[in-house]
Amino acid sequence: LGWVCMSASRKSVTLTLLDDGASEGHRFGINALASTCASAWGSSRELFTGGRDGSVRCWREPEGGGVPRLRFTVDEHTDWVNDLALLTDGDLTSAVVSASSDRTIKLWRPEGETGTPSKCYTLRQHTDFVKVLGYAADAGTLASAGCDCCVVVWDVARLAPRVVIGGSEGARAHGDSIYALAVKLDGGLIATGAVDATLRLWDPRAQAAAVGSLVGHTDVVRGIAISADGGCLVSCSSDRSVKLWSIGQRRVQAELRPHSDSVFCIDVDESCSRVLYGGRDGLVLDNSFAAHASPPPPPPPCSRRCTACTATASAARDEIAITWT
Image: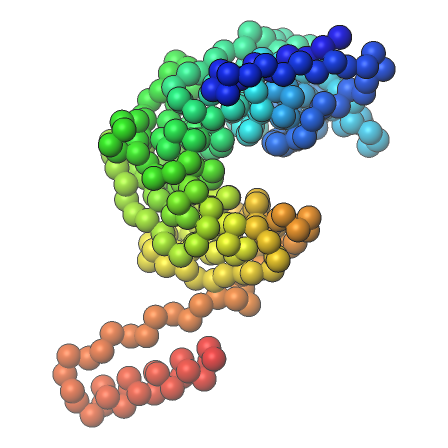
């Protein structure tokens, strides 16, 4: 029994020989996780894993707990699976989407109540590794990005691109590979982060127009999350920082530097006030931004040099200095 990985971009073929007694798990590292509490496949709790062996596996947690058992494996990719997204229909998970270094995105839906995957559909638009997926459940918006420096917003019903951001050579979404992406719940805002250390904001409804940039990281942006109301954003980076941004003000509201090395991933609550993050140092930490918020900007200077305004401004400066230093 063997497993073959063919990479068109690398012009290489990898053949892995498996032992007959091999476990049900992945043959190589796991790059992506996605979990659900309700699924159209008839299971109450499921975990999907995407690996460097090119496979996506579905695991079921037995009722009453215990070790999850493998339900099925989908071997459709020919290179690493880099990210997973679960599409929803109400409270049910209706489809699984996977992004791969084979430059494709795969989508499949359940078949009946058996949980057997139906026909797998291939979405093609990217010209290089597809690194990240983003899904807005309220709007049904699926987006993808990767090493070709562009963002694709997909029409899930037609299985075709709806908007392509940076699809031409002279108008890339970023100057380098995109490693991070998030979509606001209503689908009205997309945030991307790249190897060039920049964060950019896009409105997919307005001809994919760029609506702003967030500048502050000094190394690769690895992860992004947007609050439920779209008012703030959290990002993590190889510069060892986790930043909370005000989207409206385009500035950092708070910053955490808990790791001794790159921060690779984040997860936040709906308000982005509490954050989980993991890094190269092997630690997963739980923190809050409340104690690390930046001071509000000082009031603008008064155009009239009256005594009352001068005294008020002086008092405000003293207050800020005492409170925040």
